[in-house]
Length: 103
Image 1 (cartoon, rainbow, N blue to C red):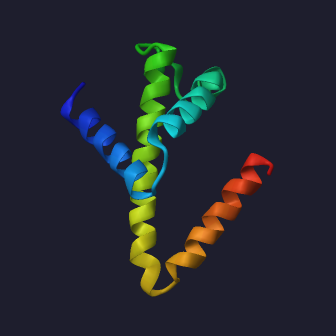
Image 2: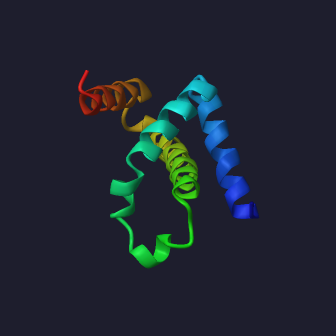
């Protein structure tokens, strides 16, 4: 694992702890979702950019990159707190996630 990948993994793990998630269960749930949809997700990329990776490697890469991106979004949201109360942002994100999950 390169330095960049290790940093992304560290940021993703830190994000889990900061938001109070059950890291083992959450990572496994999200990994299962990604790996279950990997064939469809691979269609989002140029085939030449993914051909050197196995489906498992791509699933892990998407998992780590996704959580690293969420970490950045969370940090950006905290910067907006002076304009929009964090509680409102948190409730909006929670509502959006519930809508997307069909609950």
